[in-house]
Amino acid sequence: MHLIHISPKTKGKLIFNHQESSPAHFSGGKKEDEFLLTINLNGSESQEMVINGVSHQFEPYGLIPLLSGQIFSFEKPELITSWQYSRNFYCLTDSYFEISCLGMLFHGYSGNLFLRLDEDHREKLRVLQQMFIEEFDTVDTTQTDMLQMLVKRLVIIVTRLAKEQYLSGKVYEEEKFDLIRQFNLLVDQNYSKEHQVQYYASKLNKTPKTLTRIFTQYGYSPPSAMIQERIIMEAKRLFYYTSLSAKEIAYELGFTDAGHFSRFFKNATQQNPSDLRKLQN
Image (tube, rainbow, N blue to C red; front, side, top):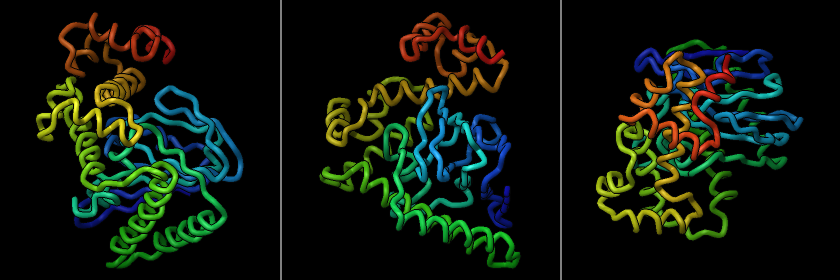
């Protein structure tokens, strides 16, 4: 099942995928799909999932939100239910930062959020799946509003799970967590031009040392590593989905010296850029 809804007012897009055997739209790497945010729900069997070239075990009834621009695929896509939406379909204001499209699931945490569902949450998601299917069939003037409400409900459920499973035992301080979110958002907007922590720290009126301390408090990678991870993510997307040369990709990502980019890429991935391109041929 592959259902699409376009908001008449904003032209925002919502895609609901349920047990599709050949979901080409899952990859998330094509430029025109870069704006889509995704929440994926696995079925009753464990399977391999590849994210940005790295293999992960996706547990039964597991759930994972993914950023736009991430490249991903599933061993058994026919078991997957996914929700993909653009920011102009669903994005609450900053006062609701935890559950906005700029919130915890997509800009508030470093790394991949693999979440576990107990029986209660499995039932909640099962009911929600059915509500989405029914609402896609109800074409009237309130359809967009209803679908946005369902997306909000989904995001709230997933955000609560993420806080419980990834912030459990940590003192949650809204101001500090919002700082992390703002940092991640700034990196997402500027990684192709700005590679130094000092730039982002100054934008946030903090010192690099203060940022590092706050990130460490929540168990995050250092800010410098997070900038590096975002650059590598985009580099891989460009290698996988474009015919740009390594030199052209280096320029796209703000490197004036192709040799510097090659060393940067190899240090981060243990691969030469040329080797990665060969794997795609």
